Image (tube, rainbow, N blue to C red; front, top):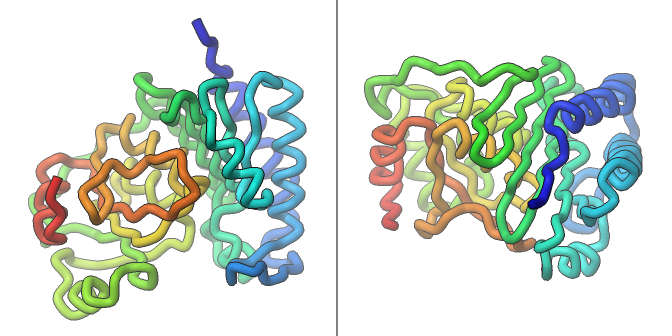
Length: 266
């Protein structure tokens, strides 16, 4: 029987590295543009290097995949996850981080046999560490994630929505006739998932997420009892580099109201 890494030990490791590497660099770091139009900072690379070293020291049986690796290597690692593959976003919300906007995170997942079995998302500025093991629920800073009062309807809810990456007709529909009371966009996909799980937003919508953006967060929401589908009505997680859309909510009734408004069938 496979023994998973100890979630508390893993969480403490991520927290320590993030506090050491990210907090001193916040809003002061130099950055550069990558070929795909996204931003890269020295903090991304420092986090990746130190976390990879720590993971391979403690759990050498698992392979390691990170956002900042070459795509060919990423593809190769995802071809066979039977032995386990770490999936890391060393700094989710790099533009926020570089601009001094206090919303970014570290996201780490363990993918085993085509599914996420461990997930950690850490917010260094709020010192909030969300963690989950498949079938074991969600913890926030080592304690069970609290329950939140459900809202009465979609109309009274807060939507965490990234309009930029949605189909233009859907974005226009949301902009002109939103079904919720107010809307936010955090700039950190991993935190989006966690905040929905924690009841800080009620419905979620994003058009194009990469594997390292959503792997840990999707497990955290699922273990909190939440629900998610792509805009095509498929389950969100796939061990692939192809971007995935997501519509999600914590409460089942609200989720069905949300996907009905979005015309998602499944």
